[in-house]
Length: 285
Image (cartoon, rainbow, N blue to C red; front, side, top):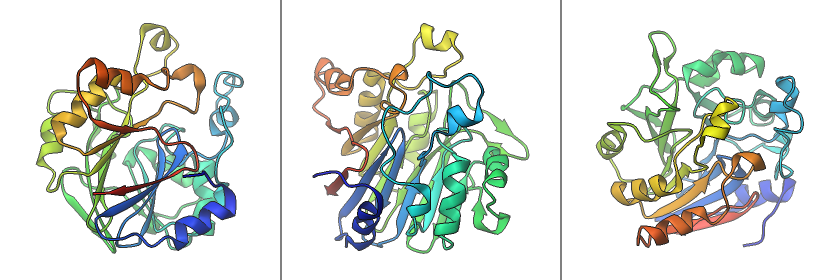
């Protein structure tokens, strides 16, 4: 479907009625998506809609310039019921996005890693609007259910106060479920944690921009290789794989067809789709 942006995109998200057994997914770029299922609740995950990296980290201009304009401006988001942020990296928890969003969507609750608390303070989001989810336990909220499991952005990290640093989320939006990996590598026990979730997700978005020595030498933490993402999707039994984390910063990406090439090389005919910013993907089970 043709992409939309700005208030036209907000109207599409707000007005679309999602049928049972279906899930509407809009791409925002990087690992950002908007979800809407048959409960009609609107969920934003990891929205980065500004040039927060170059504005907040000296010396990153040029290297961390956005490769495309954001399909939405933060102040335009008046329809968010829930906002999930998987971890405190700026391309997943963007205070310059979350602050205006919180004002424009005063009904929104923010579900984040405890490690992101300083960034939510920066965004002016009061504690009463925040939830740090327990891991591997269900979180029941009006219109949705969610589960968090530990992710490993190179390793699982836990703090006695802040909890798990890196999170993957499974979000049930009515009768369909979406798995969002956040940033992660495969680690011993990750697939088992996924299999312990009470329901198998229909659609999964996995960070699949890979990793290599050159990027790691610059301090850039990588993610799953395309072959790993395809294999995980197959092993977990998910119906549809959405490739993520492979568009916003062009130097930190792999060729756009890498997931499809990986599936072909593995002789795995997994369903795969790459969301464009502002695109609506309407999943039917």
